[in-house]
Length: 464
Image 1 (cartoon, rainbow, N blue to C red):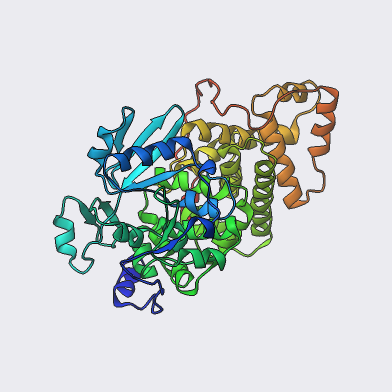
Image 2 (image 1 turned 90 degrees about the horizontal axis):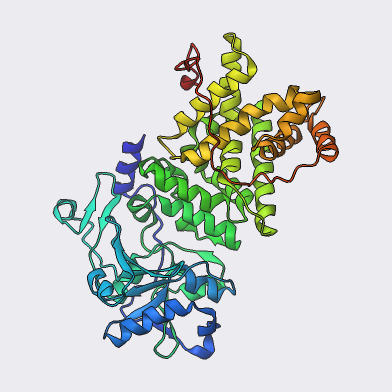
């Protein structure tokens, strides 16, 4: 499947419509009175980095999401600087600076808790000569066209053309306080349009995460994808399997914990981007039956709940999010274990381990989150059955509030005949607790189980 996609990509069959981005060596200069960015809105540390580099004779610009967000009237979470100084030259000018990364070498300049990311202008390379690229110690691509290393440096214009989307290729200059635009990004911002720079198929092959970024920006800003930018996404979605599991964990948090998770999920489903990230859940959601409708409703409810917490500036935890995203698989596996004679509580324990193990090759979930996830799942049995003193004891469990909220989502999505949510709601009124489901995700010290964990149920659920 993946090889066929790549052959089609090379033949130009997937993306016959070229993305029209003006390519001129000179940028359009937007003067200070023509844009809304003020230095007062920019981190003092980012300004200090730019002033220091310019005093040393280098070019330095604010670039990327920081410029985009300021132009949209938003407050950036971080600020990035682009320069013609090499990483080694940048490091010489800042006491608390270190070079990080191998795939893309950048410099982190630390000011207390704030880190200013400084990148050297990226240069272009000859995409037609793959053998030359693969022998280059600065640039390397794999057989699928994905960039494994890209440390060729170039001019400001080269750097603009190497960025992903036009709205992210705007440069703020402290020399005259102007904005430089090489790709018509200002117009795309005004038109609320997300447009990839260059051939969409090729740029997605270089870094498949760009497809996720396109969808995330569409949901976050309520923009639309330009036709050629959107066209190849569904066909190239399997390329996400090339991305490292730790990187995808971080990308999923950006997708679903930014306040627009529900809309992002719906767009991912439309473009076929959800199933490559969550294969087991994606398969169950595609079955088109009553169970799949309940699973889909549960995920939407969980994301809606998370979006609300973000908007209310309340803390959110990846453990609760991933517990919802993997629950469909956990439930199916636990039912298989029960059919083989395991008690429900034990079946949920085993299913939780197996579901996480299956997901790990795609998305590496750290233990500080996977352990609370499994506790949320196993507590579902106690919430369904506990009464009297045992129920009061469950209230003291460190993960009770998360498990309780999860139970409410389950009952809301499946409309159970005898819901247990009201019982636990009343019990908390009678026996108040002061815990939030986003309390520390640090796992509890657990007793070692004397009973060995089987590898999986017979007629393995992993073959579903």
